[in-house]
Length: 101
Image 1 (cartoon, rainbow, N blue to C red):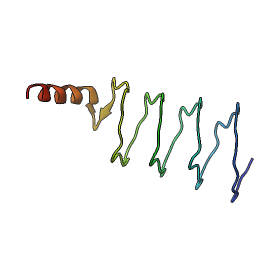
Image 2: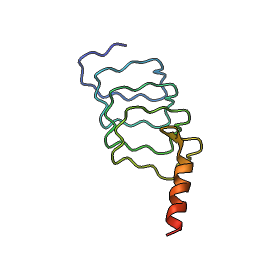
Image 3: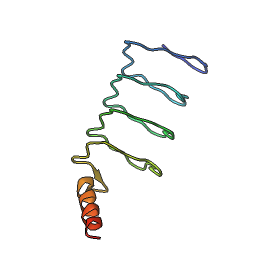
């Protein structure tokens, strides 16, 4: 199905849209629940105001991203790296430095 220059509300339920392409598309306010996005690629996307809950990012790579004001809480961080440094090591060093004070 090709949708070009349309304004349309789509309700996809129990659907397979694998391999679909979205270019210059406004998905503001869209909801995704119980969706398989494994292997997806995102470029030039505005995620401001994004809220994610119970998501699996194992093996994800994020480059050249603006993470100003971003926060993570209640997340598994095993093996997660920032600029090659294990986040768990950074947190351990931070906690050790602040426990000593």
